[in-house]
Image 1 (cartoon, rainbow, N blue to C red):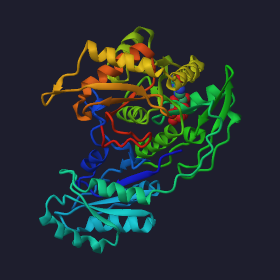
Image 2 (tube, rainbow, N blue to C red):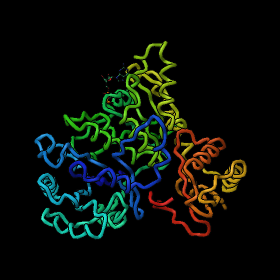
Image 3 (cartoon, helix red, strand yellow):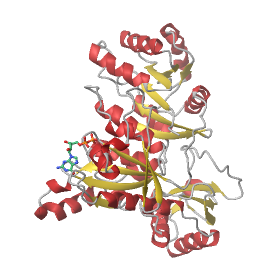
Image 4 (tube, rainbow, N blue to C red):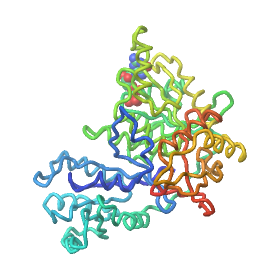
Length: 449
Ligand code: GDP
């Protein structure tokens, strides 16, 4: 099922991105410290109290304390708000209510969506009296937080979970079919690839334009496997918004990623690995879905430049070194079936179930060979390790102290597991639990471990 969308709205400088980073916590450090890739973290999958959601920063729409809300910005803001299930309207306690807050509040109230007014920068008790100032905005409930000092975030997330729509039972069909999402930037060639795969344009019908929820899937059979291409309507839909295209197409990609097992991320060979590609790739990894990189428009790259292109991309996307890359020309139908083949391989790798004892043996041998560094004069001790019962790409390590696991060490363990078990195209996730403590099988929050 697609995750519900929780949108942060508000003018610039109220602390939306700091708040988003707080909500995400530390788990993303693994990918964040990679060189060459700056991450504009605008969309993040979050699980709180067992509930999944995407938290998005809708940007400041260029609104600062002085400027008013222009017609164009207003339309964009309305669209962003319309896509959200829960809105967090963020204001700045130290500024008090100012006209642009009122404009945004008006817009949010008009949308009639579930909203929380988040008063940020309540850093000390002294500031708490400032909160009452905001009742005039007419948005309830009001939750004071300090994103910088990490205060009130848990209370805020508890409130958010209360307001999320009830998860619907969606029929995901045959569990043995391979659910594939074709995602990427506008113009990367997704529709062309889709048509090449289906071999017949009439095989699918366009959905009527509407919200991102009106997805339409296409079924096909390939080499005896049932394949579902999710949200074909979204792939073919031309974004009609003249601004904020990235925002809406990324959101739509994410919602189809939520519904897939493996994502084919289509890159434009003439312009590969742009910011938006990286954002989508990270979302796939964060969601624990399989990934295949499809470098499209390969026909446009001169033969003598092909190798340089491959080398450059591999360096640029070093954090995806475990992901298979294929080079295709959707237009000429070249190599397109290889995309399905790779997707199936990744799907199989993602479902592989390992022997409990073999996982523990590989982890223990890795720890023996290369013991973890000491943190605060204490050393990590791995008591035992196993694969998660439900999510086969997750590994649970029972340790003396979960806080003692440096990110670099997590990466080392990942490398060792990959050497032994493959998992090509599958992002591995680690859950560190204090030995002896029972662990809930679901709802690992990004705040922990
Ligand atoms: P989408 O927005 O990602 O669905 O992109 P489209 O499939 O609509 O393709 C955008 C443009 O790129 C169209 O003009 C396509 O004809 C062109 N295109 C798509 N794939 C290829 C390819 O493999 N090679 C070349 N040269 N052009 C392509």
